[in-house]
Amino acid sequence: MNTTLTIARAEARRIFASPLAWAVLAVLQLILGVFFVLYLNAYSEGAMMSADQYMGVSDYIGGGLYSTANVVFLLVVPLLTMRLFAEERKNGSITLLYSAPASLIEIVLGKFLGLLSFVLAAVGLLALMSFTLIAGTHLDLGRIAVGLLGLLLMMSAFGAGGLFVSTLTREPVIAAVGGFGLLLLIWILQAVGQSAPQTIPFSQALSYLSMTGHFESLRRGVVSTEDVVYYLLFIALFLWLAVLRLDMERS
Amino acid sequence: MDNEILIEAQALSRRYGPTMAVSELNLTLRKGDILGLLGPNGAGKTTTMKMLAGCLAPTSGAVKIKGISLAEEPKLAKAHLGYLPEQPPLYPELTVNEYLRYCAGLHGVPRAEREDAVARAKQACALNDVAQRLIGNLSKGYQQRVGLAQAIIHRPPVVILDEPTIGLDPIQIREIRALIRELGHRHSVILSSHILPEIQAVCSRVMIINKGRVVYAEALNRSAPARVESVIVGLRRPPDEAALKNIPGVRDVQTLSNGQFRLAVAPQQDPREALAEAAVKHGWGLTELRSESKSLEEIFVELTSGDAAAAETLKEAA
Image (cartoon, rainbow over all chains, first blue to last red; front, side, top):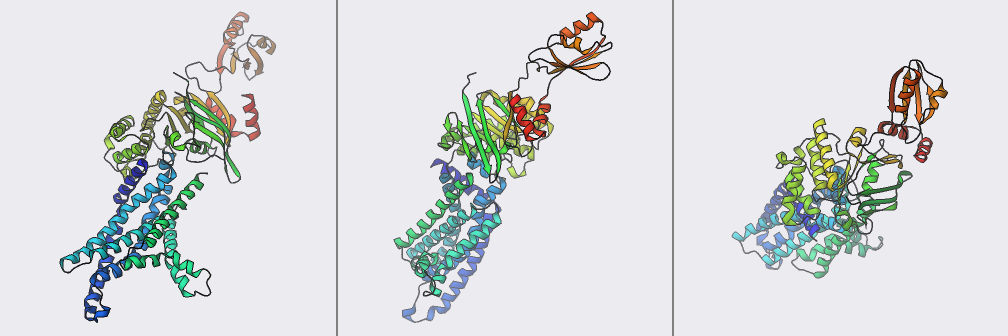
């Protein structure tokens, strides 16, 4: 456990010691800021809609903005996960971990926890952006919090998927592209399942496995255990695959 | 000095697809030994070291560190290891202090002792001047030293160094050698190199690997005089070969040009004194008398350059 935390701390330090993380955060904040303004604009223009269609501003933010944010995160998380193993392998620094008294599980968990520090920073910045509305309106904080929890889970799942792809190669760029491909594939499984439910076998299972569907309830402000467990299992699965992969590499 | 066995490898083999990188390698290292691993490029030195350090699982065979199996209890076994791979495993975005602190933590140095461990390692590798600098900005030589500091920070009984002096200037090489020799007092060191004088300068034992096989493994005794293998003698009025052959200790005589002879010496004997006496007594006119012993370099070239079959016979002869 101690080893895991030591690795996690060093990983977090390295993520934030590199300009990459700051550049990614800055770009994220800019893009999400633009979307934030667009959503607010759309909200203020739609404010005259009839009472039964009425949506609160929290719905707009918690639902709309956070869904968009998910897509943006999908694009940037592989850029950070590529560092975790692929870049270390390329630099040769991975030997430090291999020759240290640390099990593969500790290494993978440590790396993942270190990555979570970045996830928290990204989600935290988005949260701060949302909270600026408190000054001018009544925000449904519970609603926003559930949306942020959803984002956090989603991004962690992205991180776990990207981490696994990162263990497959020694080229950071391939790790980034591969991670992006894997995440997008899982993301669009739902579309595959829904496009032709008759012709594609297991279409229901496919759409159930897609990440998109499980964000839906959280987006609507409902914490459903089923969906939370889905993300946790997703993370566990890919971390476990990463451990298996590293074990294969050594033998 | 007690003779505790610190690292023991039995029948270590590693296969990469169809090529056998290392086959049936046995190795025992006792406390206080400095073992030099020699071999031409691609001989399997790095693969051997990776396996000893637990970074690569052997295809067959087993490694024990302080009697703990590396395969069965890797965490426990690796706690006794320090490893500097060919390419030092550094994080360029960290400062030397940050990096060494992390390494200390990773190797299980308790929090309270970490600062001491870092200070000690910096002292040993002369890193105090660059402690606050980013590793990525350091010169290759300093980076190598940081890598070395990383390998010894937790004071492991076994230190494995893969080409530790590569990329260093002559002064740094001397310093690193001195450091390795000093390490040898308290730790056991395995180091690889293809620089022969380096091995001769620091190692107490040498092992030559060629094509994945051990072809030579001997103690290097620097203090004792080198074993005399043959004697070159120059005589102004040479007798016939039979007369020379009668001198005790001479096994065989080979005539060279201009009254020069090469005398093969029987094992454990030195005929030089008897030769000089005989030359004076019979008035042969001694002009030259010197011993020839095989240097490590000659042994190395002999064992690694010829074809594999020749190496095999030499191995059996040794």
